[in-house]
Image (cartoon, rainbow over all chains, first blue to last red; front, side):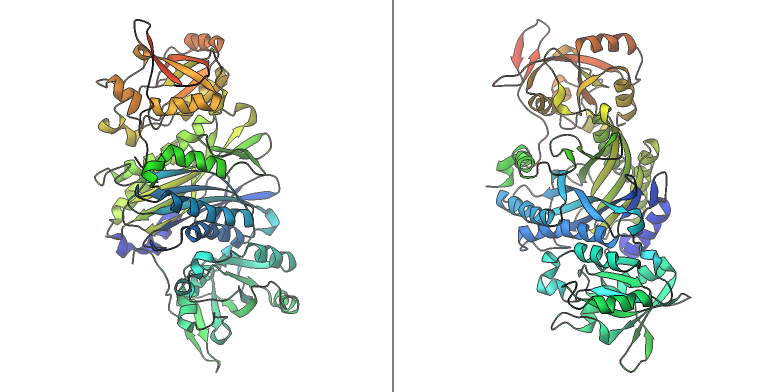
Length: 305
Length: 305
């Protein structure tokens, strides 16, 4: 069997079964970060994300933006757990013909992101590679009672997203997005969140993950979906690389959010649907403007396919 | 300027200047691991290492051994700081045509290494890439008073290595070496170590790093160098990928080691030279069997050249 047949989802399922738990592991593979034994009253958060030229960015992409994105996607993972990033290490593979100026601009872009979100870049590795590629690993912390997992959504919860969705790749936003760290901390300080994750592969790929983790279903009010200007519903649902946060809160918390949110956070907050109890078959349903309900396919970005 | 002219050493020097210190950072770029604020009485250790097909291993290399090595080089980094590894995350880039069986064997090899050294693999990322490449990031801990840096060597210290050097690539040992974690802990429990690092790029590349970090020079007794069978002195000095530990201890500690070491640790321990006070010019000197002293060039494996 080729990896293209096994698929990214099959591989991750196998990995989650193969490498599960162990001493000091609160939550292993399967959420935005691993949750680990940490300093008193806190958990450690640990994650890594890769970017590969040709897969995630083109050779023409500005080096500084590639550097920004390589760290920002990791900051987004920590934000999605309710935590704060602390330290990062950077593995960078480069062809020998690369301009030194490209490398400096890459790290300057990463340094801007590090400064903005108070991440200390403390080490890494640089090697020769056939194409540019970067892996950033991030270590963060979260107060134990503030930890947010994908798995906590409950039937009756409302579903919300930060910001707007769609068109991230065509517009170049995928290279310069702002990870929703400040927003996640501000929202979680005001209302109890039941579940949260970041949207990297598109809502129709990521929302089913939140549903399966919590053994629930979801209904999306398609007309409510906050889209970037000129972006189709299809792109908002499937294109991915938005790095907005998706979260579930109780109806009472939802009402509190409605009152609080006017103009805060500046990225915007939108209620996009509701959590229903789980069952067999499709886990995500669309609701159109006439109130008709229909299952939505799981489509979005998947590696190896 | 191309990266090939800047060189790996130039890049790392620039990085160490660009990303230095910050809150919670005891030691940033420039040692085998970063040393960070950690749980009470301990420091956190954080590092990452990459392997790229074509640079570090061939397509014909057994997948299980590649997986073993990808984690083992990181365990070796933690061992070199005197610490114990705790958690690892794995970024894996693969062509879509890769066999699923290759991927499973890769992770099984890594799992063997994880079990042996009690590392929990807690997360990662899998992406499409033009060639196989893997980055492992590791988080470890060290008791504060047991921390070992590259920079602590003092004039008069003796220089020691674990195991034997040379021929790692030709023999395939570079894919199946045993990181010297147990040995590092056992030695450090018995004698106070002044400085330690692991040998990845060859003694003539790595020893100058230890010298510059401590502002000292080193003399190598070339005939004393423990070599693998059939390996030339040149290979033992320059080939790299040995992942043995190099360390400096006081003459008194050295005598204690001489008495203790018979048969322990099993990998062997050899005194190979001495630390001298620093100065301008070359930092590593060879001493031949007639007692003649001459400067040794800094040669070994360097990326981008």
